[in-house]
Length: 129
Image (spheres, one colour):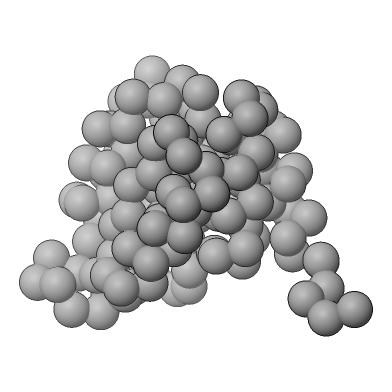
């Protein structure tokens, strides 16, 4: 099973995105990590690492918003044990649309590669037709 970590500068954005994905994805394990260690805007690498290490999924996809959340995810990835690191992927897509697409795919039992492919399609999918 594929699990998701939603990393944002804003606790509200992380939680709201996770809530939206959970609503459609059901049983997929999703963890929101938003804000700095004091609950303000920013990214807390320690909480991000704990979230990654706490997920029980076979494969973990990390979705990030901007700036330091990306840097924190890249740094945390290097700090993980080799066993955990090999099952983690950073996904370069729009946060909400990418996580949503990947979460829905994960709920079908799709592989991490299939979930990432769906998330990447969210990058180019027009919202208005």
